[in-house]
Image (cartoon, rainbow, N blue to C red):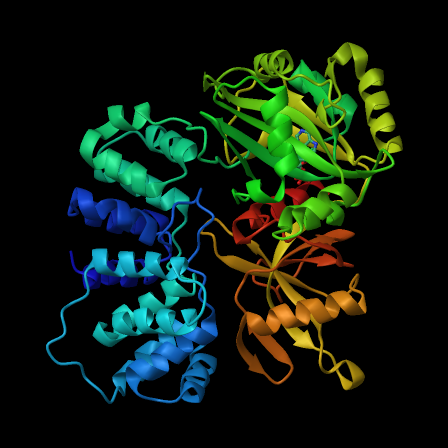
Length: 551
Ligand code: AMP
């Protein structure tokens, strides 16, 4: 199967903003593919070559791609940088540069989807000495055989910015339409496997019944169920009926998998952090049965029994070296709160049953291994729930979680099944897409950060400039990162690849035509750099709008 055919599909997708048209285009294309190719296309349509559950990434910076493009078209890197600045993106720059390309490759084979896919996967595996040259040569091999439009989408795929306006939802609908399968069946299969390659291939080969058989597998992480902001306790509890109310710990969410004798630990971004937390692996090995399971909990760092700020635990999780030393300096405490799998999938069970089973299987005699503090809340004991909130705050935790006791676990959704009730002002996680350098003495630093939220198509739409809340060391750190991620700079304005996630507090949401969302926030303050979160975790425009409606 030729890569050019996929590229023509990309072009058609980019040319329309209509969701149904995009779905039709993809569905028609999927029907033409064979079993060897369809899985790869499933991933390539979402702009990558690894399933969503994998923490592998192509991992090539914009500068390296620019260097390869320069070699492929026979020009200087400075010319490529100019073209990127003029056109606003590496893909469009390729169209311009390929039109003037001086060298032509004779006898070149057309690129195939399999070759492109395998080459891109190879890129992520190259490390060590001379790795830059080896990466360049792989990219160059692709670019020198590519047509202008192929180069456009190749470079965008490598830099992980495909820009065809296709999110998970459209790919899901297209698979359903192509093989005449109920949307809900495809949605569930995707939710449980997090892998469009598996879902598309199974849909082609085995249809609805094959998809229905797919399920959670211990060892492969699933997107966690997310929390939504809670209305006042007295209002929400009568609506829910029976709720499980728990202390909300301010740490990092862990998903711990046991498969056979192997224990793996993942973050909420599905990153495998097993190696950074050997004592957690041991805790699980010693205090839970040796059965297959998937457990979720929050891990916090403590000193003298008191929780330490969130940054401390982040340092532990990020650690690659001197893990032993860090273990002594930053002791960890676990609070488990959910069970997704125990000998078999549990997610369809009501929370009450999942929690009961969890309580039965966890031995909490070790000080570090705990279940989250919880009470069953009903309209008859609102005062007890309020007490739990007060005591949680007094113990330096964030607040409480209010969860519907009869609901199943639905991976990846943010909804009413799980609510958070916090004392702090509300914050949103936003992504940095650009910034402004300071003036005078501050001219070397990016002082103000243009932040954005995610829309339905997984595209980022700007909301505000955030400039407060950053000390000098943080400004220096962020400026360094911005330079690494730089796409272009004009005067004092820098445009960057969307990678840095900031947690931003604010006082109010207001309408504002100046920003792409049509809204902005007043008094934005940067609370944290969320190194544990990535572009996929950024809050949505929809969430901003529902907060606007609520205020
Ligand atoms: P937020 O990140 O503000 O949306 O709040 C939701 C997060 O709170 C979850 O993803 C967990 O990391 C964390 N959390 C802390 N304690 C609990 C708990 N008892 N139950 C569920 N989530 C918790």
